[in-house]
Length: 471
Image 1 (cartoon, rainbow, N blue to C red):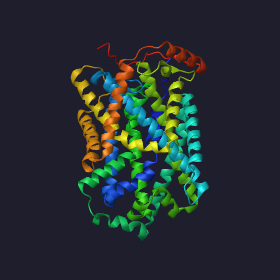
Image 2 (tube, rainbow, N blue to C red):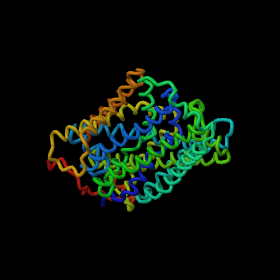
Image 3 (cartoon, helix red, strand yellow):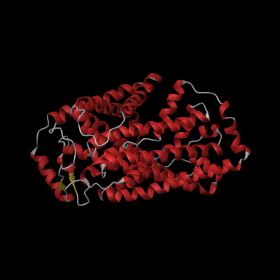
Image 4 (spheres, one colour):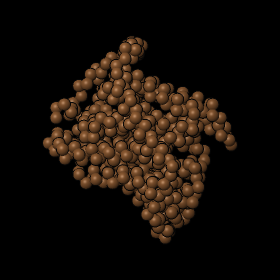
């Protein structure tokens, strides 16, 4: 019994739409335009640049997924190239990032859905958290049903949010073609705007990257992808190319209706746009934002549970997390992730931990590229069904270094020290729990009891991948 390879080219595209198109396109235009000094050509260029850089990062990750076609393929790359400790630290960082990120997303969805009932004031914390927990557990139960069920849910929700973005894009194009003075004037004077300096451009790129987060998530479920060497890169190129076009057209539509100043001052650019064009359709945007975040949260649960699954297979977490139910889903891993996320939801101020794991996440991305370069040097004859162009690896490494060091150089803060402490805490956990871990009779009894309770069986490690022992 093992994970089912159910994700083909179509569902690979849908998975990337689900993981990437979240609240970013509804919120990030404000940050990108503000950091671009209100310069429209620079702002649109940064949106395109961020998309291209994410394609490059994704293609580099695709080589990892093709060489090690297993869930959380980057874990096996780091373990082989840089050692078990670095591989475990990457797992530690990713797991905490998923827990905190999913909790923040569920709170955001709950707040968006409950806000209409409390017009003119902030909704109470208790009903908001209860709704967030209900959303979390509903998505958890959906994931327990297996990757095929999740894929169909993602298909429906992705079609909804892509349809809303296409509506915004087409409406903007129609208004622009009609040639009304107030819609065309800001594009005619776009070249006269002030040019941003280097630090502002750097900040705008950081803002733009937020809208493309999730472009490498398909590699995290490589063990459930049909023919990863072909499906991952082709899905990435097609899905990300479509997203770049949609994002550019959506931004043009925003700028057709709203002035740069109105966009910068807006808390939700899409909501302000609809309020100006079709006030009666305001609920559609609220639905679209909520659906986008729910869809992204579902992807996060699917991907995050595979981290627990692989860590368990490698003996770094209890064995129960690597067992599969009748739907070929690691049900115990999904439930554990939901429990951890539910704990993070209760004291909602924990969502601020996101800023502490951000630097560490980009550090892991940089380490992945270093490990990929090292593997190419040490094992040039290693079978690689898909091999990315070498300069792309250096470009990905440079973008990771940029995202790591630019915020530190721009504005050094105490939180950067906390981020280092966060990484070191993972090293401590590895030394105490993994390196000195001894089998326990009690843990075996608990594992047997949970196995019977959830009707799960041990998974078989029969994936077609390049094992360490063979080389």
